[in-house]
Length: 163
Image (tube, rainbow, N blue to C red; front, side, top):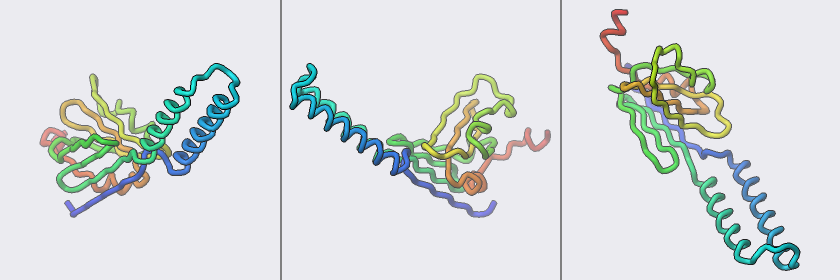
C-alpha cells in the first residue's frame, strides 16, 4: 500500500454561522437590558447577567469546537470537541464514501445490532463510513471525503478474500 497521509481540521460550525449566533445573543442581551432598565415586564436583573454568561459560554463553545481527523497507515484518529478516538488499521474491515445519508445506511453490510458513531460538521454533506470489528460503524464527515477514503487503510481478512 502506498504511503498515504490525510489530515483535516475545521470548526463544527462555519465561522459565519458562529458570528451570526453571537450577534443574535448580543441583540437578545441588549433587549433584555433595555427591559430591565425601563422596568417593563417583571424580569429580575440577575436573569440578565445569567443569560449573558450562558450566551458567552455557548458562543465560545461554538467558536472553539472542532473536528480533527488524521489518517495514516496505522489507522484513523478522530478528535471530536474534546474526545479523542483511535481506530487502528486492524479494526477497520471495510469502508465506503459518499453522501452522509447514503453511507449511514449500512444495510449492504448485512449487520444487525450495530453500534454506530457519527462525527459530523455543519455543512459537510459527504463523508467516509468505516465498518469495524465488533459490529461497529463509524461515520466521519469531510469536505474532502474522496481523499480521506483513499487514505483509510483496511485489514484484509482471509474469509473475505475467499468469498
